Image 1 (cartoon, helix red, strand yellow):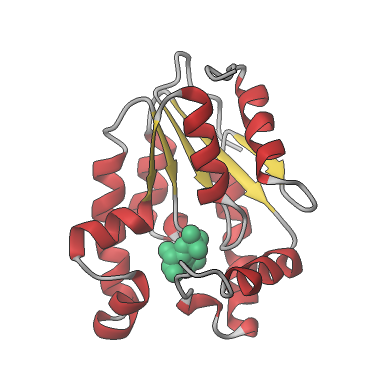
Image 2: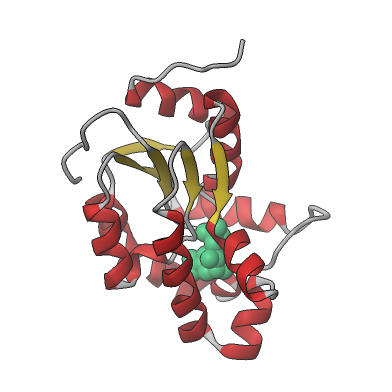
Length: 186
Ligand code: S3P
C-alpha cells in the first residue's frame, strides 16, 4: 500500500477487479460528499462514441487501453471528484505511475474473492442497462488476470476495504470513515 496523501483530499479513486462495486459505491460516495462522479469506462465511451465491448470488438484491447490511459490522465486533473476505474487500469505502467504520483488523491481498493466478483458480474448481466465485460467471458483467463492484478491494486492503493457480503451503502460509509470524511447529506 502506498503512503497516504496529504489532506485536504481533492479526489477519491476506486480501484479493484470487475464486480468489486467501484461504480455503485462511487456514485453513493459522490452523493454523500456533494462531489462529481465519473466512471472511467463511461468517460471512454463519451470520448470515443463507442461502448467498451464495441471498442474491444472493433479495435481490440490494446486500443481500449490506449483510450483508457488518455481518459485517466484527463480525469485525474479533476477536483472534488470520485472516479471509478476499470479493473484493468493499474496494469498499464503509465497509469500505475500516474496514480502513484497523484497528490491529494485517495486510492481505495475494493477487494473481494474471485467467486464473489464473478457471481456479481453474472447477476449484473440480467440488469437492463448491463454492459458486457469482454475480459470476464472466459473464467480461467479472468482468474489469471485477477491473480496478476491483485498485487497491483494493493500497491497503488492508500486504503483497502473487503467487499464480500457488504452492501454498497455500507461500503460507502466505510470509505468515508477510513478517509476521515463526513457525509454532507442528512
Ligand atoms: C476491464 C474492466 C471493465 C472495463 C473493460 C475491461 C478489465 O471495467 O474497463 O471491460 O480488464 O478488468 P469494470 O472493472 O468497471 O468492469
